[in-house]
Image (cartoon, one colour):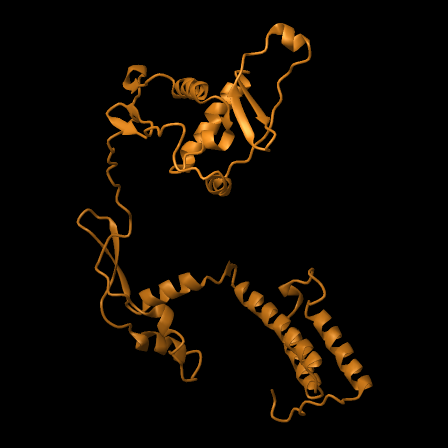
Length: 316
């Protein structure tokens, strides 16, 4: 902020503030803030300088943050336009390329030299050492006697200590990697036992036949293995689906399962039909069932984890 700018004044005259805002908005419109169709070439250097001068004159009257924000918006627009014009600057018929300029400047000051190898191919290398700034300085003196400041140029022109190497890329022999095919699995490689689901369903049915009517949770819950409790309920559902097991609520309100005879065609014709229920059985229900029914051992024996051998490997 300029040293002569007035201090913050919340009691500034309202009419004066409106006038400042109006002029700032007109200035913002000129700098392209209100239109996306203005192009950098629509402004010249004199226009931009005049707009900055107008903004400086208005800023002397600014005493509140709202007007200061408008001032910053105008300056931002002017800066953006100036940057775009600089990037679009052309020397003659070609656009100015910063990378190309720096590369040629390094070469001119002796930082990079070209030579030929034994085969006659062009080579390019970077010489170790410092750049010959006097050489480019003598060129600059012909155009201006102002003292050159090199601090801004040391960054992009800093030399890396590199060894000489060819510019062109040599062809590399393509190394063919050993092709690997996925392991082929044939039918005889897969050793299967009897169908696990069918076997376990039959076993569940046999156990239920020995126990007689029993509380559902006392029958399926394994207090030591939640996963097998879920599997027990899964296998039991097949017995119920086939009509060989009945599920009902007894007089005491307990869920009970028991074996029964499959309904005949006459029974189905007389109105007997299957019903479906959705039962939620998560770990919280499993723990609650163990607590409520005081289940200490599993009615259905613990099953060993199933394993399948594929080729020379076992998968559990």
